[in-house]
Length: 179
Ligand code: GDP
Image 1 (cartoon, rainbow, N blue to C red):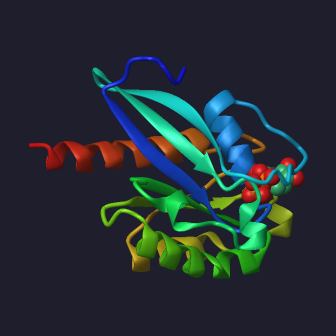
Image 2 (image 1 turned 180 degrees about the horizontal axis):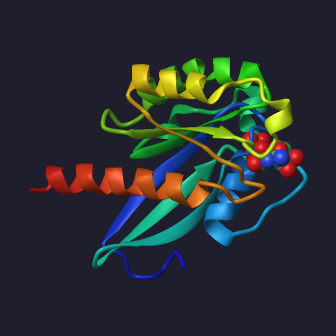
């Protein structure tokens, strides 16, 4: 997959607190798989995902923290050159939503100034355990100029849409720049 011809290669990153569902979102995007257990692997992981936009093939390299956020071990190199970010919280844990502000600061400090950030409220299938309302996510996204969606990696809801929204926006920004 990584060697396939492509017109554009974009680096994108997943960020957010531990256990919000980042690695399962990555699995969905890269392999359409869902894993029920957390794997506290140390060391950044990434996967590739090809997308067709019109006649262009976009290859996205998607980086996952692979548990490093637990040890506050994410360095600036994780963010360097990233054109897109999926900032994930868990709708059943308010603390993970509150921490999105901290993640945003990091993204803005170390990331590309044009970075497209998509805010994802994950685990939308767990309606009975909800602690963060949809409106809270929408409001934050509006204030901070982010795209927003609730997703479920488990049920595969909106995962593809959120990713496509991010890639399309990165592509538009990149093609405007090269005009
Ligand atoms: P990470 O630490 O952010 O990479 O989180 P993981 O992807 O390892 O997921 C943490 C836990 O949440 C695991 O037990 C997953 O099975 C579970 N999980 C992830 N996404 C969802 C989801 O959309 N719905 C539900 N119900 N569980 C999820």
